[in-house]
Length: 533
Image (cartoon, rainbow, N blue to C red):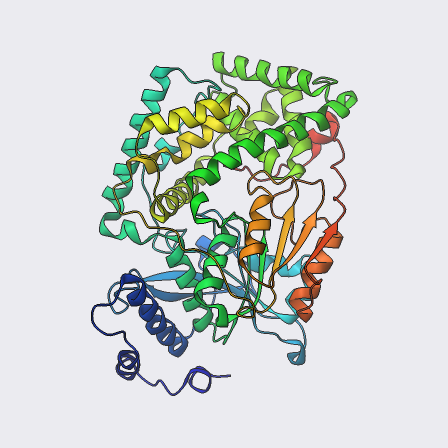
């Protein structure tokens, strides 16, 4: 259906402005009211313009038949006719018969700072094929990400400089050094972005999503967000409940305003200790393959041995303790990484550093993307909510936490510490909440041992979104389970997206099988997974 039929006869920008002014709030409005009005203006304008899809730019590296386009959104929703920025969008059309078509299905993989421009490639995967028959599969880069008004806070070569240290119990002098780096990083964000910095927020990501919905000419949104994508998806459901058709929250952020974002990161650091233990127990169980130790404690000693050796002599001149830690942090997100990381560690301790260098060394060609993603992550989280501005609070809380959860704690501090010195105004988080009947049924997917978004977050989201349904993968910890290797979870996801059907309130799935160990010989011959920053 054409936009003029769906949204009314808006034939020119001038008539759009006139119609928008007719619903503009009266004088003395709050910022929230002005931004709500601005979202309506922007959505109507986007519906009239649509998206002109065509060949994807080479920079996106997306093959035909995937198409690309852009949608314009206001930088500041309180000033909807002011500065506009363009968000990049990708799409592959539904492959099924016209009678099967259910509109557009939009996906966000989280971050903040991640892009889903690649998502239309999933249409060819077995797990998504039936969904791709019914829906146009749509990805996009949120504001600040990729080519969508890109944000940068630091020279990318400096950001990815290696090797680096990663002390588990940092000294006072090391802490002072990291404080100075955090202050410089925050200043770099302000210097590069200028007044625009304050507009990189989760609330604006939710508003952008509604403008994208309108530009796709969808009266209601079908959306799946993973990880951080669940948070601004929950904001969307709170702000625009009547615009929701179907919505999936995969690995949910705890939306409690008191947890956004400082306490959320403390909870994540605590949870990663259990996932690190899961990985070590799995490696110990397969000691005949890896020879890293027959108990989790012995595996930990092997890891610490590698850390100590890398501090003295970085592998390949680029992999120090910091790069080792970043690579092994991936084991807490996805157990698909377990064989790769265990094999690399085993090879390194036997004198072959090549697998570890391949998996852990920074890649120069990925430096700009890595720095951009971190810049957006930092800006959104720092802008979204108040953070402690006294270093003593950070030091006290994390010194205490590191006694029981040393694996991720201090690394997480250094990633987030620019928020203590952030120059832009802080928002108060929106209270995510809907009344019963305001939303259609929504689907929450969660793994019971997820470390990146601990399980309590899924339960809290279900309490706040009335009528939502929680699907739990029991005794598993992979982060992002929809469309993965648990067929039970996938069946619930597919049935919901294709038919709108859900269990009454909750359902459980048995855990997916643990990964098979890979011998060192097989590992050496197996193509590597992409490096995770």
